Length: 494
Image 1 (cartoon, one colour):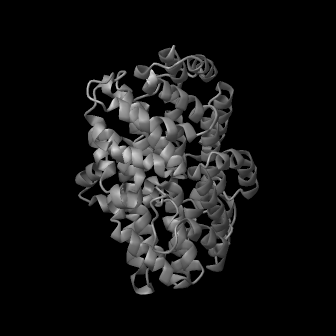
Image 2 (spheres, one colour):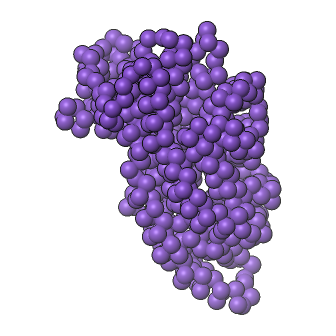
Image 3 (tube, one colour):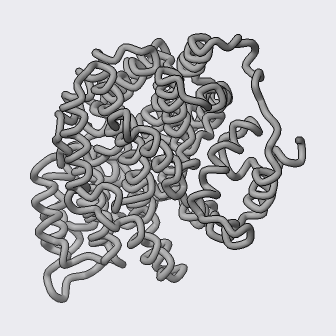
């Protein structure tokens, strides 16, 4: 009956799982199935009730029992119990969970240990995690992959691995429980990679999860939807979502959600130029020069902190934050971490270094993938060029404006327009200013559209990968697109 409860939960039948668990618990529970029952109870509590207390009271004991030599493994249950406890620890930062996880690190797989490193205190433990994830995922056979799906997806989310193939490997191959994790990973990547037309689908996914009784998934899908709203500066929409997910998140002590909401309010304030408010909100999460262990996604507000600090005259605080990022070897965690550090360095650079810093940030491998943040970097660069009466301000600002227009990020688009007007240019329709590709840009665009990497393109055209990246940085807005995947269609239409 306990196995039936676990199977029903993974298959998306949580209500049935709940009834089975209650029936099993009415009688004495044999000691030898206690770990399996603990897992079933926690599954219902986490996914259906949005309650993590049983995670801290039941799962540490389950891990102890499963670690006893000769104990029934229940088909690799220790990995799943470890993952559920890691999920609870990440969502709540409860010390009981972290202590139990630390105790059992030697009893789980290298992938589980990597996932723990990626979430526990990434500023000090996650260096090299993205590269290790790639190596570990390549070495899994199909059977191992099925059991490791959640660990792979959750680790990829921690380090913003932009390889969509990682979760496509699981599409259609597993029950609803895994498919929900796939969808959450996908919508988070959609936000990072500028695929903001997925926002409405994300909201529909929340409603579908609610109907299946996966209330925690529904909350998290709405939490991801809030990212799109904040990026677009839609503060009214953000308030409505917060009113919906804030109370249950606070009841469950889900710092993961409530802290994210604080950051998203700051991001929306940045969109509208309210830098003092943005700084105050972000500094509460990550004070100047501090990358807290309790904020495992510290890199997401990193660029925003420096942006707000520079605009409010707090250059010393901005430098302290940058020093903390360098000391943490932030660039060695993932490609996204590296780009955010380089972009923040550009914003805070002294005038005699700024131009070089902007070029370096744009040339970080894969910089063009982070569409929204790259457009913000262009806006900052264009504004700097205009203030210092340097050539090229108009082109950079037009590129940023076109990207913001495609994302529906109206406040950011209007700020680009204001900078263009201040530079003496008339600002017309949203499509205004789209330019033809140069011959070199056309060659690079066509090669990139075939799937070649920057290194492959550079080899063919005798360019460095960094130069290819810089060209792509200019090509996307000229074609009115925000991702490499859209290149082939844009070239056909153009």
